[in-house]
Image (cartoon, rainbow over all chains, first blue to last red; front, side):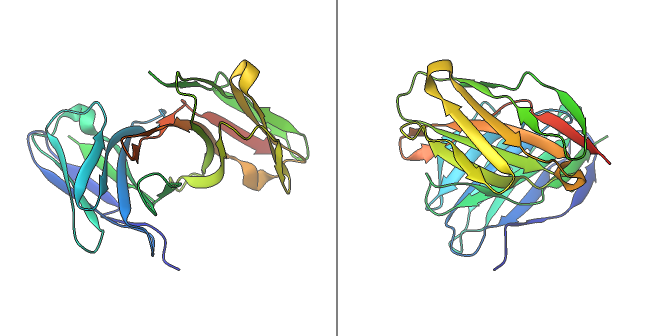
Length: 112
Length: 116
């Protein structure tokens, strides 16, 4: 039973660039949530996608956007990267928007 | 607004000792859920337990146990006879279901080191 997978594992970008992170949910799950975890901090909620729609959003600027595909996989896009966007980006999936969330291994983004 | 506080930033114990990780939460909702996740050095958050606000029964799973007390807004986690493999960062989290969606609110985490 495949768990949540994320790609790429690591990414290095420069300020002002754009980045796309990808997530495939655990088998049987239809909801994807994204979190940002700065070094030494707890994860911060970015948004949740269910039925290809953004259902809830955290306190992140519009530079952060997402998409969910019919196969339930998801992308997180960040435009105009800032140094402060350097973090571990975690994807979590669940069966339905209110069930327990299971996390992937994350994508480590470094912005130089 | 919801908030989770894990006052212990780091804990270090010797193997086989018992250790308790504290978690205090704030919410105005009457229905909510509490979680504990483990984050080993690999970075992936591993789900440990989910508790709803109407179930105050303590739970035990092997060497792990959880004490949920609504009166003090606490959801503490105890590891009995700790092992080196328990070394990780542990996060307590809180959520409510809002408009059919949920977001997890995490504490700052407690870094647990088990020394051989």
